[in-house]
Length: 335
Image: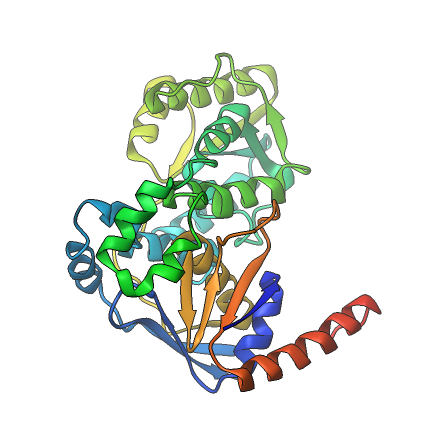
């Protein structure tokens, strides 16, 4: 076995060495999806259905919550920009209406919208038009550092002893909930916070979600009262929409798609998807290479991934291309 530590962008080197890409999860039987390069795009085939995920999870009893679900895959697709909310077109039309108003319009971001990386994947929304209530960042920070104990890793390994080496990489690493918080929500927060407007909520962060939701809405209402501006909360949570109705705050409620319906995507979107899957699932297999989002010895950088090669030929080819790309990058040259 041979390992390489890489950045998300360097995953493209691995993809360039394959005529076809098949993504799987080591503990499941069967591929999650397949992709074929077509120019600057990838043609995608979703080889596993919602029912397949349900059947896989049934085999893992009480540890199933820590394994990838169809909903997790859908979130990774949203965060990669490959699929959109079911009512995204209605929002795009509403956006044009907002821009015709005499008031400045700002978009308050609910926590779930950060998990879906909505701003990063939508060029029509500028971070400078977004509001981040500190309660949102507190919610993410609270979720980001839950880790697996040795006992929990042993419980997972008992269901798949043949994958003990793979599962063992996750000991003292983030749980699935924390991986989502770190690699989706926290990365989105960091990407936009320098340009967004950050405001302080009228109440401290609570460990009760309902209280935090009310605090976020009231912080945005206070922002509206203090400025000649219209804050619009963007959320994918119906409960949050109910609070907005009760408090008199403008909002847009996004609808998550039920099924993943996609046939192709841009190359950059597919690279983001591969990173998101490795990060949220903990590890995925890309053809014969394991990609670890979390692994033993990983430092503090959220950007690092570990590739584990099973054969020398592919590893040599990858290593050669990786060296060339890193040298060109150091010289300021894009390949």
